[in-house]
Length: 163
Image (cartoon, rainbow, N blue to C red; front, side, top):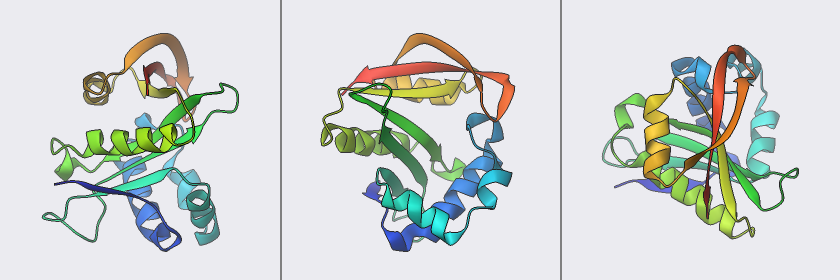
């Protein structure tokens, strides 16, 4: 069973630890870099939590203390009604257990409560396992393409789905 909950201020260390693990595990999957986020202070992590929309997933039978996954969402000001799915990561040992689906569902619910109509994400062209997860969850390609901000040699494609 996967348990997902929105972060609270006391989660700042767990959020930091899983985010840094994600950036080390898959450096070419994220717009940010490990070096950038390793420099964040406790206040920076707490500020991120205060903005809302950040979720941690747990698999109690594996580890009740360490998050198995992370995802975030925010409303895109430049695209009213659009919720961005960001920072999606599932620890390697938790993959294939429904963590990704549970995180997407939590971000979806959060976005619906804020009147979002569409969920949008960027995924690197080479990340086939993530693209398959997103397709299983109802996302389709939008035709948008851009260089990955943290490594412009890698291309990202956009996917979206209605909420």
